Picture 1 (cartoon, one colour):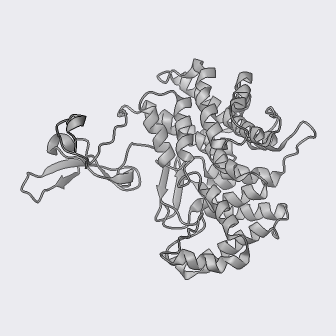
Picture 2 (cartoon, rainbow, N blue to C red):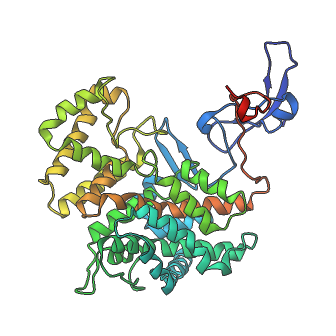
Picture 3 (tube, rainbow, N blue to C red):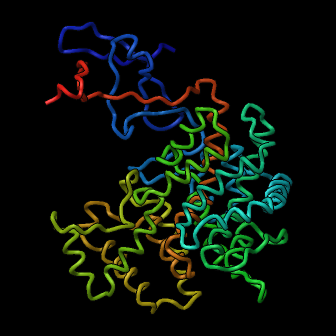
Length: 432
């Protein structure tokens, strides 16, 4: 088949140049501009890389206009309804859904890796009790390479697999320990008889005083949240993991870098921002005034948890978590909770007000997951930490894909320089 080309022409009379056009299995074609500088002496300018494909990937596909999210080709709706988190984790890591034997083996390996080195627990005492959980997570996950340095040879496939298992297995333990340390409660060791999500909830909410019995409605809700957050294509934190990985950094360092990137309020901190917004509104009677300020250009009010950078349609994850959110509120008999009622009224307005409908400002996954966490009594500061726990699966899969990619190069964006042109140094005594 004849190669498809894109021609770049110039208005100053410079000769035009051709570039290959590459096509994926689905989604927009891309223009391969790797030879641009060599051919023209010019770079592309794309702040935020919104029109730039940074890699080839076969893990996750998003169509923001249509509201489509696929993990390895499977619609998120099917996976969230029919799978548990570890089944989806296996899919993201390996490309196919496991059979019964593969699932049993995978679950067993993850379960047996869930404990952390005992000395790691002492690492927490170096942090203040009121330290933000994401600060603790960055430090503890980054420190894993000091405890598990037997599996950081990134060029050895078995080492990469062992690191992947360790990260996926230990992140619930590390996240729960972060919560316990913040709360001043004793750490709870994982129990191998429990499922991945039940074990996480046990380590979060169990105490030595009494037996913690997982609630199946709550467990399913958290499991679904983890599935919905498992991967999301080349977002900021995933790109951070890939950029760090391109330098040859060990996987623990790369995931720690991803956690730091996820911490930003414009990324993983969005569900935390939702609860802060609700606290600021305070009462249902204040909603009309708040909505009025949102609609005014100089109103200085932002509707957090609505709309999405990528999705210009209803976030498919939000549709799935909406039902789960209401199930949790029903199970916990929290429909009359003041903050919950406030959130539900905002949801009603956003889904019925023409201003929001025309702008496609639908409730997103952060809106509903924040409400679920609030209903469970999880502190706002922990929301992004749980997000990191879920996204670790995607980060690891993306990192492994990067390392195995023969086209992989160290990340090195270019710039449009707008600073001073060359000038001579002036001794301090002669400067004006």
